[in-house]
Structures are given as C-alpha cells and as structure tokens.
Picture 1 (cartoon, helix red, strand yellow):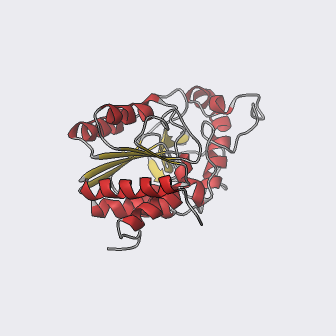
Picture 2: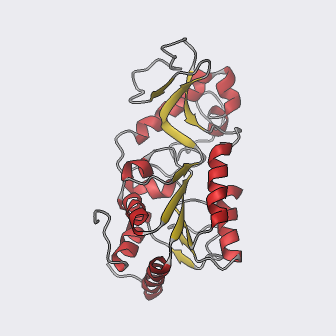
Length: 263
C-alpha cells in the first residue's frame, strides 16, 4: 500500500512528539469503532438514515430524555437496536494502540463520545465516557443497578427486579445534561496540561469536543486529527491524517517501535 509522502512525514512527526510527551489526550468518536464493525453515528446511529422513526419521530426525539420520561418503550426500542449493533464487537487496533500508549506515557486520557465500552475492553483505564455506556443499567425509581448483558430477550421497557420501576442504561439521552462529575474530571486533567491532543473519528460538531482542541491549538500544544472525512478542525490542527483510526494508530505505534500487544 502506498502513502502520500506528507502523510508519512506527518506520522513520523507525530511519533516524535509522542516520544517527547508525558501526557496525551485522545478525544474519540464513533469513527474509532468503525473497524470493529460498528456504524458511525448520525446523532446516535448511522443505523438511522431515514428522517423519521416508525413512530413519526426524529431519532434524536425518540432517544431523548423527554420521550423516555413519558414513553420509555419507544426510547428502549431504539436503545436495544444500538445494543444489538454493539453486542459482540471487539476493540480494534486503534483502541488497543491507545491502551498501549497508556503504558508508554505518564498519562493517556481518553475522552470519548462512544457508549460501546470498547476503550475499556481494550485495557484503557483513564477514560471519561462523556455520554455514558450501554453496559450498565440503573433503576429510575430505586437504587438498583445491574450489568446490561443481552437485551434482546428483555421486556420493553425492562423492569427493575427489586421494585418494578423502569430501568435505563447509564447513557446521556438527547436533551439531557452531560454528567458533571465526568466533566469535572476532564477539566481537572486539562488544567494539569497535556503535551499532545488527538481527535479521532469524531465529526467535531459539539463544543465540548471542539473547544479543547482549539485551546490546544491556541496554546502551541501539538494537535492531531485522524478522520477519513474532513471536519471544521482539519485546517486548524497541526497534523490531519485522512486515514481510518486503526491504520493511523498502528502506523504511529510502529514509528515508536511499539505494538499494541507489547510490554
């Protein structure tokens, strides 16, 4: 496979920055999970190409906190579709590369929009799941919590075995506030400083994704965007790699003389 010389040079330069770095931030979106067979998401799912759901709602409405509060069965119908698409997915080389860099650097924080749990499965431990994850359920009426497991045989909406209340996954639905504790943890880490900032597989629409990158750009911190499709950040970052996440991160690790399974 041939690569443009400027991409080769960029990968080499990124690796040199990592060699001199102690702390790296990886901001990730649905694109990092594409090589694991998951759809890249429009809103929550590239699963949803039509304008409206069967119920005549936009998918963002069906997956909103407002609809969940009155018709949890509708929200759960589409949450289960997402869970079915995530079920059985395994971390790919990009997830594993970031986990490997956690052992190479003093700190490698992952700030992810994804709810698929693949960063955790790959071995990363310093993770801010800003939209939560689908693997954990909590009762809306009592303190009961449980691991989600296979949702395909559950009643819709699933009920709490303790009190009969409606269960929900620990995810941020449309229209809901981001979790303050996770945001605070991210802000604290950002204030401590990073030596390089990556954005991988995200369309970079939301301010809380864009602003950390722009702050890094404005303060001379090296920035990298990995995304086959250009975004509003592509012309602002120091290095834009129009590659899939798995290929790009594998090549960067190779430049460092590392592999994702190494010590």
